[in-house]
Length: 398
Image (cartoon, rainbow, N blue to C red; front, side):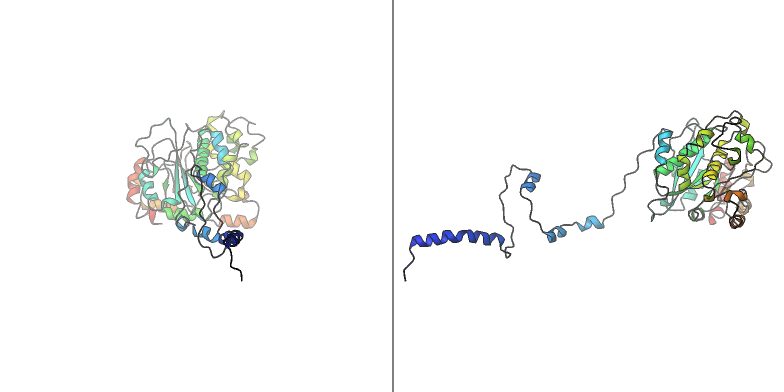
């Protein structure tokens, strides 16, 4: 046998060298990552685009940060402040969802205080709200900027005043202020489900828990809707004999209490309205019959969704024997457990049977309703002390 010469050994090595290189790169037994020399003057993005990392599904799953999944989501950014221009405000509020969101979150009550004075019963309301978690309610205040407010709003009322404009009786400005409150509440919190309009002379007749259960269980608004009232024509013609036509006919005109509790659906319906508001926003030529805040809301909801309303207010007021446009005022000497029980036991005045149609079953259910009064007015400011003395043992026990 011939011995291999040095030249033949070199040739054999040169022929086998490519196979050795291929085997080294593609061998499944290789567990390391092939190091590649990358120019240092390239950015990280450029390096990855030229030399992408090898794909490995298992390794990508292993790099997921479990802590970032289990940790609570960051707090939501608060919504931007509502615009000061009413037309833009109403346009934005009319686009919100008509249902409270998110659906699994607790529903909230929006308390809308319409005032031109400091809130004399703020201590009572403070005790009322402090008995419950803060995630069940919101407070909004429309305070006429032309009036002084001393003492200033504090406690649960601090920083709750919306952008307000002058408002006075016998003009559309009170109605506009209530619409402004609704728009702000709609935009501020998508969880606001029911909207209660209150005056500075209003006081609660029950605990917050009782009020919350009563309102969140209802799918309807509570708003007094009365027809065939003796003074309907005078109020309808307060802007002129035919000023309301053709949008609002006399037979469609309704009267009701200024204070109501509305569903989110109806709150959005009100801020979206342009057609009826174009008539009710007209100035009156007869001031003695000009009460748009008692006519606009019941007329609009009666025309658009009467079956979605309980035609009664849940704010008790005593009009017996009053002819000057102001209800009875309860003085401090009258306040006691007996008065609270009397106001609670009274029944709301419901609208005519035609409000819910001619269906006898609907009329029967309406006649059997016993909706409780949740609030009451009108109380003298000096009644705050006797009210506070019975708050825990009488008012907030139920």
